[in-house]
Amino acid sequence: MTAKILTIFNNKGGVGKTTLTYHLANAFAEIGRRVLLVDLDPQCNLTITALEMEEIHKIWEPEDDYIEDFSASSGNLSEMIKTTRSIHFILKPTEDGKDDLVNLPPPYTLGRNLSIIPGRLTLHRFEAKVSERWNSVYSGDPLAIRTITNIRSISHEYARRHGFDIIIFDTSPSLGALNKNILTLADAFLIPCTPDLFSVYGIRNIGQSLKEWRKQFETVYDVISSSKRNHFPDRFVKLIGYTIYNAKKYDGQSNEYKLAKAHNYYAQQIPRTIREFIPQEIALPYNQILTDSIGGNSVIHTHNTFPSMAQRYHNPMWNIPEIEIESDDQNTVRGNAQKFRDTQESYHTFANDVLSRMDLV
Image (cartoon, rainbow, N blue to C red; front, side):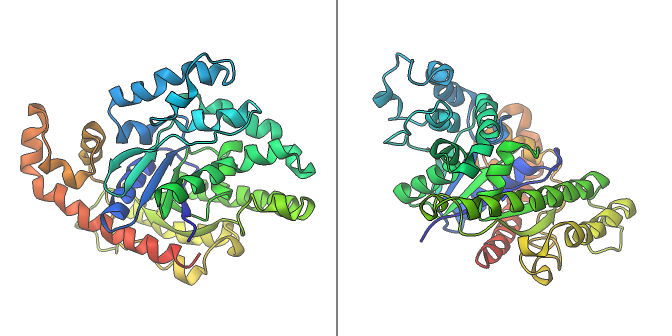
């Protein structure tokens, strides 16, 4: 069975998207799914969370000449692809108009059932080519189609070779050319939202962009040949729901999410905004995705400093009490050990709800 591609996206930064992506992937892996993370955010926050800086340096430095000019590099390509390479390195032949890599470098193993293709800060160069070549897709130009679709094709090839059944694309918050590809080449996406005005308007922007992108892809499907059509997904991406995330908890409040009055107001606006601005044909039936936040209340509240610990030690929050940590953090971890551990059950609840929704796509 072909692996399904999930994207976690909002047109607003600061919603905790990378924290959610990283922990969801770890939860999927722990409940038995084989997961590949692909860091397609030029800021590389997911890569920074998942890997030690020294490991990132080992991956990036040998690639530098290839990123400048893939075919002019004096490096030994057969040796290069024996170890993990960044997503920009893998896409660079397409960017330069050369033949794709015959053999793909191995993904970086983060743990049992979980691997990553790291990001790279230079990925904005590939985005420029996506934008430049987009109009040539309508005429069926092979290089343009390869540029638009190779992120999906390469990800599926990794899944075939390594047995992944879920691929998660991490993205920037922009609505630019690269994210148009990432989002529309996925099978499903979900929206993490802080309960505020900015997330509400971010959903509006997503909906308006999706309407435009869907028309563009339908036009492409109509004008290119069936053989070239096979490079694209069978259907347009589906929204599988939203989750309130990174919200401050107030136990004294009587509303279902235990949010301050102003935050609860915006939490109630989120499903209404999705219904109004995300076209019904782009979403699962609204009665299935808008009943409440994915996973109920399982992950909606802020973890305060816990995510920064996860990033510092390159482990999900629930593992922090079990690993060796620096002396400066020991008192904090000892005093909150059970709270760290409790996050595991919350993310497993969230992950199972996401899986049940992806099964409907």
